[in-house]
Amino acid sequence: MSSLPINSPIKGPGLTKAGVVILQFLLIFFFMAVELIFRHSLGIITCLAIWIAFFGGIYLGRKGTAYVTAVSPPVSLLISSFLLMPTIGGSSFAPTKFLIDLVSGLASVSFYLLTGAGIAWFVWFKNEKDKGRSSLSSEF
Image 1: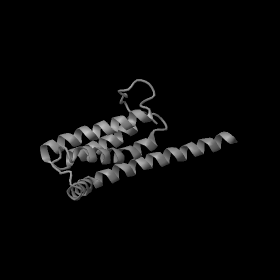
Image 2: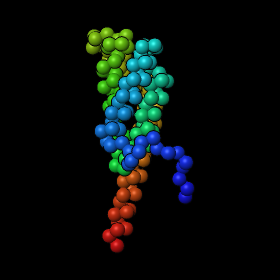
Image 3: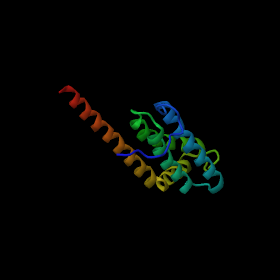
């Protein structure tokens, strides 16, 4: 089996768990802010940022960071929504209007969030399965 000719931009073993979380949060926060400034709603730019966050975490993370890669983007999206929607997103601080804007924004990116999370969880389960097999083979 040959490896891909793509060199990792990070020298060494890759990003730690904290590095993956920070990378994903900043990526989602930045692109979400740009989209809210120009469009006043969530759309394709935020969706692509979510996928890039998932796949970037898988690609740039060390071994053992697959769980964090799967969990962090939904949490980052929620925190970013709470910070950005009432301020630059055009929503108000009124709870009912804010919650309606939050639910509609999350609904617009749900497909990308679910597919990215599904792939990231698949990678995590595959790594756990391989880890279990390697520990069983080392016992004999």
